[in-house]
Amino acid sequence: MSGPTRGGSSDQGVSTVSTVSTSTVSTVSTSTEAVHAGTPHHRPHNTLAPGIAQTATYTFRDSADLERYMRGQDPDIDREEYGRYGNPTVRELETRVAALEGADDALAFASGMAAVTTALFALTKAGDHVVLFNDCYRRTRQFVSQTLARFGVEHTMIAPGDASALQAALQPNTRVVITESPTNPYLHCVDLEQVAAIVKRHGRVRTLVDSTFATPVNCRPLRFGIDLVIHSATKYLAGHNDVLGGIVAGPQHIMSLLREARGVLGGVLDPHAAFLIARGLKTLNLRVERQNRTAHTVALELARHPRVKQVFYPALESHASHLVARAQMRGYGGVVSFIVEGGRSAAGQVVDGCRLAKIAPSLGGVETLIEQPCLMSFSELSDEELQRVGIDPALIRLSVGIEDTSDIVADVIGALDKLALPLALP
Ligand SMILES: Cc1ncc(COP(=O)(O)O)c(C=O)c1O
View 1 (tube, rainbow, N blue to C red):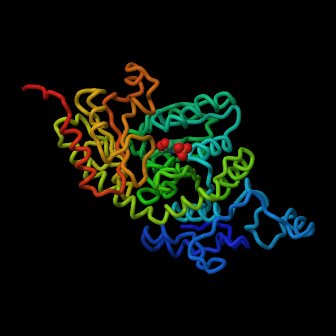
View 2 (cartoon, rainbow, N blue to C red):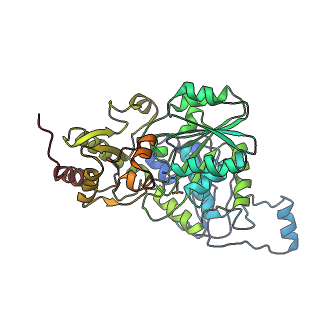
View 3 (tube, rainbow, N blue to C red):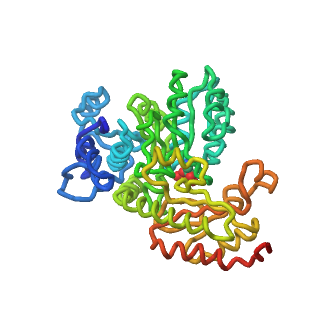
């Protein structure tokens, strides 16, 4: 695993990236990495926790100091000039995520969508072509199919896991292939090694994987030959449902293009948000391991419940991408989707019957959240349109938190047990 390339410390009371060597920590466990990788061994003022450099701009001692900096001759290579171009608190978060993903470098953004849109703007121009998978996050799909289309970028949408469709979709002008793994809400796991191998045969095409649902605890896409990994840090990385953020990690030569684009587009992460995400990151491994175990238990309980028609969880052998997930993931994640017998209103009764799980969009935090996608992300679609995009009106998505596994199981199974549905007579 290579470490981030920048080093040094700032004089803001917020040390940046004179770090514990990531090659050292990579040989130890993920929990240790989540706490220490990419952090400095000693901080200014001997603080254990990082400070927050809450500043919009940076000062220069005199004109000679400024001129030296502008000529690129400042001895402090981490020195910043203006908040849109960099911040030491944000930089430490970036360094830590780069270490966890095994990337040269990472960049933080104001939200997951700021990360996705900046990356795609940085890597495409009019006349280019993008391939994306049809169960990408709907705003990513919207950005590619509507916004990028307005700037003259074409796209082809294919089904996840369809290698021959990917092969056929690649054109001489294809520059980006973007996917998620696992996908939302059916948790399809894409064979990342296969995607990277197919795409590499086509030369100048970059592969981007939104790994929000996996986290670096469960899967590290760069190890499979993927170029860039993206996270909505709002979800598992921050983990507390109290902050928005996004991350892209990858090789230096691509990250420098994204850094340039971020400075122009301006979707930077606020230093206070960076502090919160960095704090959340320390418990990432603990939380995700617990969420993996709880979600698996919930999935098994759901699978044997008479009012459940189908369960989608990659650990189950019945899941379409179980074998891919088993080969490339350490754990199967904290989200379980399931279809309830009795249609839309029965699913609504189950959601309403939960007491612990709260109805909300988002996922990956310490609180268990539940939602019916047809009423949330897909609320504007008619039943016919839902059918066309493959969303069952009785589908429920559950993002397990860190509450006791038995309480989460009791909550969801209890709500299913209360379902006022006559069971079909034999
Ligand atoms: C897989 C995935 N990627 C990206 C995003 C966008 O992230 P954010 O809400 O932080 O902008 C989301 C949001 O739900 C998501 O689920």
